[in-house]
Amino acid sequence: MGRTENTYKNSFIIATLLTVMVTKENSERKDRNMNSEIEVRSYCSHDLNQVKKILLNYTSPTGRVWNENAVEEMMSDALKEQPDGVFVAEINGEVLGFAIVIYRDWFNIAYLDYIQVKMEWIGKGVGHKLIQKCIKWVEEKGARILYTETEKNNERANKFYQKHGFKITGSIPDYYQEEIDAVILVRKLLHFKTSFQFRMSQGAR
Ligand SMILES: CC(C)(COP(=O)(O)OP(=O)(O)OC[C@H]1O[C@@H](n2cnc3c(N)ncnc32)[C@H](O)[C@@H]1OP(=O)(O)O)[C@@H](O)C(=O)NCCC(=O)NCCS
Image (cartoon, rainbow, N blue to C red):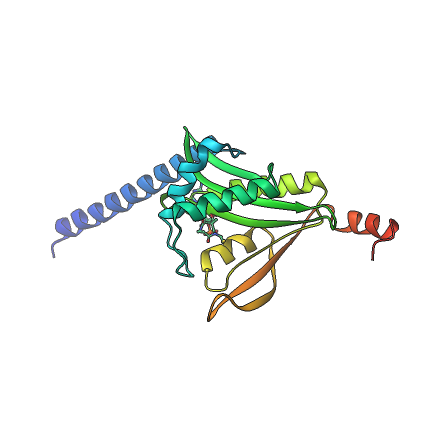
């Protein structure tokens, strides 16, 4: 290969690398900008159809398949148990995900019952916004810990929870179905020590 040909080849490689870097940076900037526009708010009944679509299009690692009745039942049960603990992430009227969290004041603990992001929005920071909201909400209620469970083989969820301060504290064999265990994840909250001491001073067992 001649010297000029080599120079052309090198210039081409550098130009391609630069284009890839600029495109990646632009796409990350776009993601960051969109991220700041995502709003997390309380669930309203008119969100139900969008929540149904999210779950109906989701393939669970357990193989669970949702149908409309099951989604309606889950949302209705959640609203009965904790009317103010259901949140949706939204951008321009599109629901991108939702979370259900329950505060049990008899023990100052909170349970993250469900968190789910729309397939095409996974990995774009929607889950982060939802879990931040849940943590803030339960801390305001006075919870000491937030706990949840997920499939042992759900790598994304396990990584996501651990990135948000949850620790795996145990597992339940065959929880979802035969050979699909659950792991239990616990996140200590701001009030971990104080409300424990408070409960003790109130004579809790
Ligand atoms: C688990 C789940 C809720 C996490 O939500 P998510 O929106 O995918 O998670 P996030 O985007 O907030 O964070 C995941 C990754 O995206 C990154 N990220 C966060 N903001 C980002 C942004 N603006 N742009 C690009 N990436 C971003 C995070 O750093 C993280 O990356 P990492 O894992 O390499 O560190 C979601 O994947 C989901 O719904 N899964 C299916 C259902 C499920 O498993 N639910 C939980 C168990 S019941």
